[in-house]
Image (cartoon, rainbow, N blue to C red; front, top):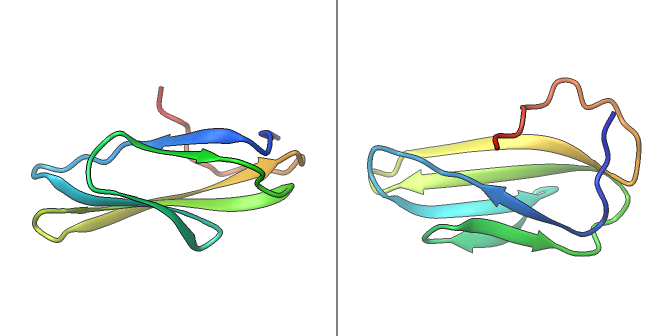
Length: 88
């Protein structure tokens, strides 16, 4: 079980063999930030207590898209299995 506070920074990485032209971050299905260049970050403030879904999506210059979805708990204990291991 794992939790985080209501205020935190999300950082994500997008890689391709060609340039990344757009990277987006969604929280619970709502787009929060769109980037056209790194760093890909978003400062979260006041996210409600509970379980939330984060989605990072990227598109490269060839139009290929990829996304990753993780679930987090904010000030609540929950069973996070399975969830990707964060990269350092």
